[in-house]
Length: 460
Image (cartoon, rainbow, N blue to C red; front, side, top):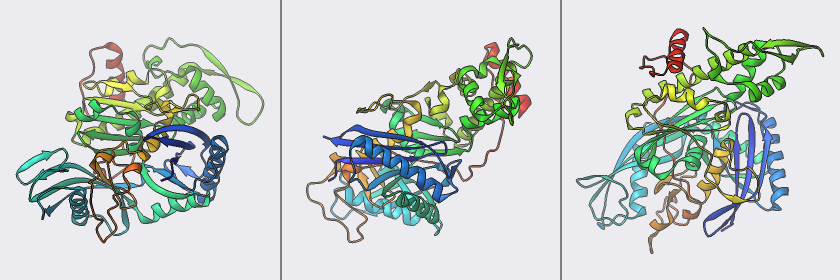
């Protein structure tokens, strides 16, 4: 088996490509490239030619950096913007009494058959979140157990076949084939969540340049995912429009001065002005720092309001013990405090991806959670079982039986364990529209939280 993994994260703001060398199931980063995204908007490919050019540039650079030129397959991310999710279940009889990976695979296929997946869609992940063996429920792993009836409950992530083919085409035009397609929020979760968080229930929110993608992980699986087409670049655009300056200048102002906690609609202590370049000529003008803080405050309040309402609608909020924030947008000042206002009963932490050894400096960055997760996905950092985008069953290495024959349908491959991908679980969210829905919650007793909450109530 090739001991090199190429991962490509197709984002709205950047295209990342990474090559990792795998030794003893441990990855080591030997190349990394970060290119400005083209042809992708809010997680959706809108121009195949431009997108393929950006991906080709990222691949060429990472190959030069790593000194690897013969790698021709890649694990590729897909945004939740494309996906639709279903829950289903399946039951199989056990002829020989003992459960093996073969029986689990048959149960997953039965659950797919029983689902209401539209004919124009194809599966990306089929993820079991609960097993039942005879009268024993909530089995964590049935492998090796004895029984006559195995029932599995699954979460299925799908996308339209045309969209999947377009992703494969844009990657093929960049010079490589698609080895597997992985949901972005799933990859970010693999890269950032801790075992205790997964066990007790956790929501992971990846806040990127143009999108926010949330997922809820309970016990052994992803159970819910949500997409919002808003990210840090929208804050830059808001600043640009509010103070009539260029996007480049607005991005610089956002990095240096933006703080959503510094705006109070009744009492502003910021009377400072900034000298900014005017649009259309070489002149400069003064812009109010208070105005900058206000638009930043409004956008972030709106974003967390929508995300918190989405998690409420999941019906799983009471099972969540931690909110994990990751992605480039989490680098903004005091963003954790805003999150704590909307998730007042749940601890919040900002997470960098798990460390991977390598020659690339500063790779362990909040903005690299998805690309890190793709690499970890490729070396088997996942839950016990999954049907992946190639219709193969993925499972941890310690579940490989000594002697097992493959079914005739070729959907089962006992040799896929080292390139696994099964830690992903999603929800049945049917809409990714940006709908601002405000639900009354008790504000914090702390004065600044109360003021923010009152202000959000007036907005929505």
